[in-house]
Image (tube, rainbow, N blue to C red; front, side, top):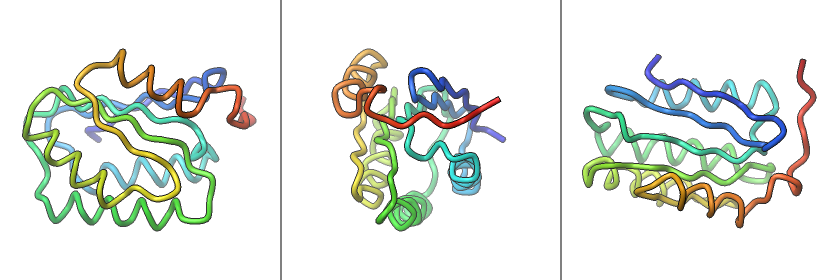
Length: 133
């Protein structure tokens, strides 16, 4: 698995990072886990600054379209994506265009801006907590 994540329940935040080459399967597996555990409403901060390559455009579009379908009619937290290269930014823009539904997706070059946007767009106190052990 090339995507790892940590959940901060007090902040209603999922911090996920990709390393090396992330596949469509990796992203969809992560999304399935978020749905299964009830944390889809949480804000998501994806760190893609450690990627060594990008997915094919058709795969990015497919992932975005699948995410849009999942989010339609359901509470789904905003997604901030942090990138460090133009290639990954381009792939993230394809995902952004295909995935944006009733929740926003934005691309950033630094973590501070991404976190500021998440805090402004969806403050943690406005998101219902998920019971956890």
